[in-house]
Image (cartoon, rainbow, N blue to C red; front, side, top):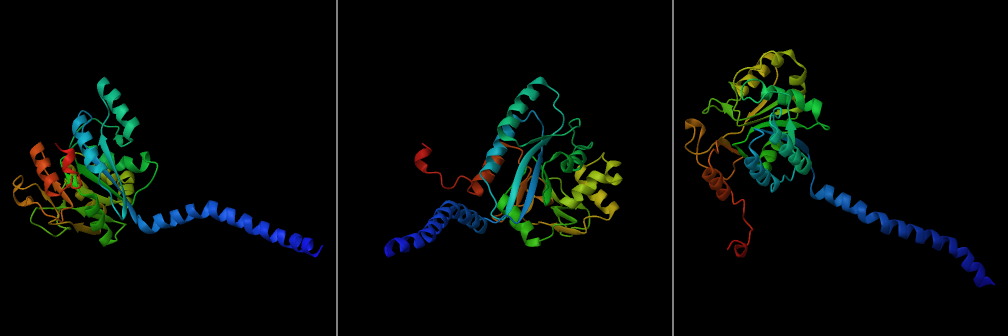
Length: 285
């Protein structure tokens, strides 16, 4: 009888302990996984890279998808999207729609395809309105530039400037003074607050025709914006021999290399940075 009373007294405690154990074994691996993931791969900020290109360049777009798809950043969440104006051909409407369904990496702007007649303004002014999320930084890039995502995010992360920030390769080529002129159109980056300002201000809205990179510098100067600036030299540059003082030899610390107009130039860059390193030779008979 005493033993029965003992068991009846202990049973509720054992049941409670068992419930706790089952709950712990069910929940804690997930909790630990989340914590470990946060510790192992923190994402301190986010970048949207919009590659301004044309709808018809299907093959080149797929090539760039591969190059950016195999890259990652240890400190930043980076999204790469392709940006072009309204589709004008039935072929485009079908094929681009297939790309959008498969990759979800295309932004179609409400404009007529152009280089220096407002496309860049439409891009920056549309981003806050058409995207479902905000980014810390928004970059505009050409489709003949190769950006190294880890190096770009490391460069930006060191600066720790998330507001009123204008980043790129300053023109003129020999200058290292970011307040002299403007950032080259190869690839330049704005903090989110500047992108919102472009979407709301009359200053850029009434001045959209002309060299797009020069116009962005003009907008910021007129509006008293972009007080935090940085020119990433020599790590951003034009491919050797393509553009006088803006060109130099390939560097290991490269953030972006521009003017890759021919396939052999892209191949040279891919080899230089060992992009395919790790592929077993047995697979390359």
